[in-house]
Length: 165
Image (cartoon, rainbow, N blue to C red):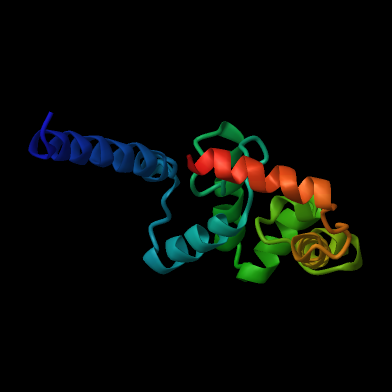
C-alpha cells in the first residue's frame, strides 16, 4: 500500500472524527430554548458553559443532551428573563445544587484539597524523582560496589577475550 492511498483514507477518518466530536455541541441547545434577544441568549450560553451537567461526566449543560441539562438551560433563561444578573443566576443554581454544579469550582476551604492536590502531587513527584536520581547516581558511580578481586578480574578478562574471538 502506498502513501498516496493511505493519506486520503486518513483524511476521511480524521474528518469523520471531527464531525463526530462537534455534533453533540451543535445539537444540545434546541431551537425552542433560544431567547429572542440575542444579547440575552449570548449571556445564557456563557452561563450554561460554566455549569456542569449533573448527569453527564464533566460536560457543560450547554453541550449536554440530557433532559436535566435542558431543564437547567431553561432555568438559566427564566432567571435571565426575570432580570437576574449573571452572578445572581449562577448563585441561584449553586444554592440549589451546590458547588458541584460549577465546572470551575470556587477556591474555598471546602475545595482546598481539590485545588491543592495537583500541586502537592507535583511537589511529591519532584521530590521522589530527585531522591530516585540521587540513588541511581550513587549506584552508577560505584560508591557501594566493592572492587573486583584478582580472581574475578581474571575471569572477566577471560570472558572478554572469549567474546572477542
